[in-house]
Length: 297
Image (tube, rainbow, N blue to C red; front, side, top):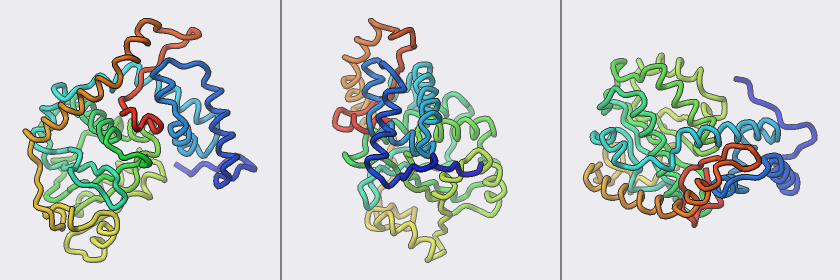
């Protein structure tokens, strides 16, 4: 749980040293499939290096584990009909508004949990994260989480197994994707539960978590610093009357699925005709629009 130190003599603020590390990591990965090449962009390599404090060996191990996970889990093949039942109550969705820097905002509402399927919930999480990354504007790498704990009780707590796997996926397969997280109106009882969850989080992630209370003006100012109250929904202390509409959201996701399928169609055909390169499993990667290929997750 302790923060890892940078390599001796390495200065993360030195552009030349960063480029050298990125080149070293790229060379260490060897030959990749078409999807692997697209996934392991310079921006991607930089994120994995940052997650491992620019230690090439550790970053390589982390990235190779992600490639194996994607090859097995195939997040790029998850489609809206596969997970739409999980979204019926609006427990998690990509917001129609963005933060002040134009970053994607993912809204989560634990009190609206509507299934008990561990696998279903994890697939829905992965789908939502992939879609959020897909929607990031050019030049942006990270997203914002807005988690509504209004009315939350211990009965709404996720099983430890699901919480553990969620933390594992977020930290190990989506490194450096979180800009900041707002926990909105968490009750006192949640503090004890959060202490358990923190065991699975690294220090960097913990630093990005902010507890926000609607009746606490100072804490609300922290959120307003990142999200303009003009676009923030009324339910979160903003002025926007927008609410989640499952039918409209489904139409949006189906359109996004078409874009995802079209983007990966050629690479999928190429990789499937050559399932191994240099004896290694061809890595399957997550969908990204061509505009954002440089920052594939």
